[in-house]
Each structure stands twice: as structure tokens, then as C-alpha cells.
Length: 481
Image 1 (tube, rainbow, N blue to C red):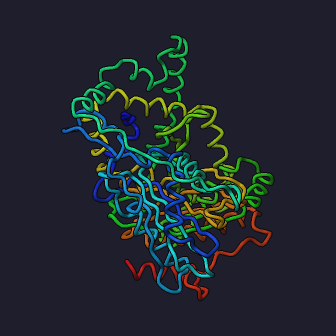
Image 2: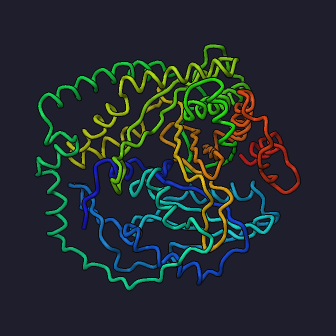
Image 3: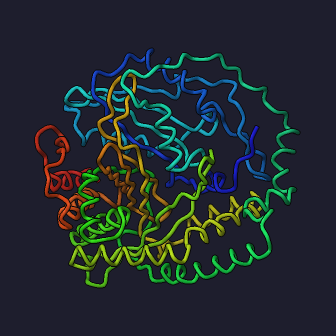
């Protein structure tokens, strides 16, 4: 039995009829797909490395304390590992639509919070896996680590045999209450949440000054955020689209114009939103898009749970010159690093450890319903392995990430690097963002405009097997809405 952390619990409370706090990604593999019994045996052999996959949540009445993780006495692997197939022609459009439907569904809180969907029927003999976990289990970084647990570095890697597993006996109601309330009663945990329990007073003062110094410009940036069609009420359903660029191209852009790989990625996302807002008739020279950029603050070797903070950037989408857009973003990120915004943000996030869980739940739900006028979108970049990975001897060809939509935020972008390429996954609200393919087109065009698209790159398969253009896809998407 393990008590849930305050931040992990916040992701539970954030969920509503319109918001699903899912972490997800799709992987596409070379064929043929494995036999289902073989796959089940393989996954069962890997579960010993991710014990959370066999645990579920135990809640207290009235949210008097944070839930605890306990072993699921009725764990059923076949419930979590599912199999489906695409309708012909099995192209990207069909796969993206299926993925969007899967991530639009909330996970059953009575069971371990994950699903693995095997998808057959992809064109060119390929097959896919849709991985879906609750944000309360992992953040984006640990999600990619779990991905590498399930995958292998070698085609002929040894396959662990399933080991006998017996769930620990479920705790009694009294034990659950005592363990859950211990977090409220223990000053040590409260201090540890801020990492101040064993720090000198001078360190406490320096951290407080750093937090205040960072919060001032952070607050100014948020107050500058403007409203547009990027913000507003969202529905329960999602759209999903993808883009991909060469990592070497991105590095060449960085070498040519300065900045970091992350700066170039943000500049590419800015190009995507510039194209979208131009098509919507909302672009002006002074237009900016305010984005939250989650940052991992997990210490090396630290395991489990969400250890994330955030910084905030203003994407200068109204700037016509792509190089100036990149330079603007690089300057902002340099200032953020000097101010230590991510550290300050983590200190503020840690204050949740001082909130009684009932108040945390109410606060999270209230925040989910407040009008959003400060942050237009979310952009998260997770580094992945730069070598091929395999599942049961089949090479993973692509890996597209998904990021959840926050309340009042209609479009968000996730980036995952894998085997020499950067894969962009764009999530959109189904009812209000039918044109997210324009963001994907703008991302790819943005890298090319910065001089990073000179070499041929692997072409993305046509979405319906018949060479459908992105513009046609956008028209079809609007008709679906």
C-alpha cells in the first residue's frame, strides 16, 4: 500500500466529463503482428518491472485523504491488452481517428489505470500499438521509460518468462484510513514535499527569493495572454494528427541560427500555429500564442510519480521572419533558465502537499471550470532513444505522442524523438479544432524555412493510401465535425 502524491492526485481531480487525464502514444511496427497469446505471455513477463501495472486505487469516503495504491486482487491481463483492426485501406487517417477515440475515453478507476491496444490492418503489412495510461501513474518522461521496459534494444532480445504473482492482501478499512491520514498528520512529509526538511535556513531563504523572482515575470507573461479561437469550452472527444522531421535537420538549424534543439522545436510549433491562425483569419503582426512547457524536475535515478514543473513561453506567431521567431524564442528560454522558473514552479507545485486532499480536489475541479485567458496551448517535448527498438522481434518504425487537453485549451502538441526523427503529435478538440492538420503542415514547413529540410526525409504514408493532401484532409475533418 502506497499513498498517492499530491500532484498525482491532482490529475485525478482534474478529470471531468470533458477532460481525460491520459498519457498516450502510438507505436507502428513492421509486420507481421504477433499472435495474441504470444503477446500476452510477453507482457506478463514484463509486469514484474512495472508493479504499478497490477495496482489500482483505493479511495476514502468524502476525499478525506489522498487515495492509496493497492494490488488488484482481480487483475486480468486480457482486460488491459486489447486487439482491434482498422477498416481498409488502413492508412494514417484511419489510425489517427482510432487513436483519438481511444484517448477520448476515461480509464476505469476500479482497475489498474492502463490499456494497450494492438491494431492490425495497417497498410504495407504494418501493425500498431496504442499505449494509454493515466497521468496519475506517470508523467511523459516516465511513460517513455515504461515504453522502453516493454520494448527491447535488440531484435533477438531475451523474453522474460512470466513469474508467479500473488497480490498482497488488501488492507482493512482502518489501515487505509491510518495510512492515508498519515500524510496529513506528518510534518515530515509536508517538509519533504518542499525538499526543505534538512536544508539550512540560508537555503530556504535563497529558494524563497528565487521563487519570488521567477514568479514576477511568469505572472507578467500569463497576464499578457490573449484570447482567441484557441481557447474556450471543449467537448469530450478528440482529434489527432501527426508530423515528423529529421532530428539532424533540427540540429543543423540550431547550428546555423543558434539556440537549442528545444528552441528550434518551439519555433516549429510557432510556425504551425501561425499557419493555423492565418487560415482562421486571426493573424496580426503582434499576435502571440502563450504556451505552457512542462519540464521534468525528477532527480537522476528517481522513480515513479509525477515530478514535473512548467515554464511559460510566448510564441511570436505574428512575426513573418522564421529566423526572428527562433531568435525571439531562444532569448525567452535563456531568460527562463537564468531566472530558474522551472525550479520556482516546482516549489509552487509542491505547496499542494500542504493542502488537505478534499480542498485540493475542490480546487482542481474549480480550476478546471474557470475561463482560460492566459495560456493558449501546451507544448511538451520528451527525449527518446536514438536507436531502433523492437517488440517481439518487430522493429518500431514510428512513435507518435499524445498530450491531454487542459480545461479551455483546444489544441496541444507533444514531441517525441526516436531513432533520428522528431515525431509531433497534435491533439485537438473534436468540435472546435477540425483543422489541426494545418498545425502539422506548418511544423514541417517551419523546419524547412529555417534551412533544415534540404535532405530527403522518410515520407509519411498517405493518409488513405491514395495520396490525399493535408488540405483535403482538413476539408474532410471539417465535414466530420
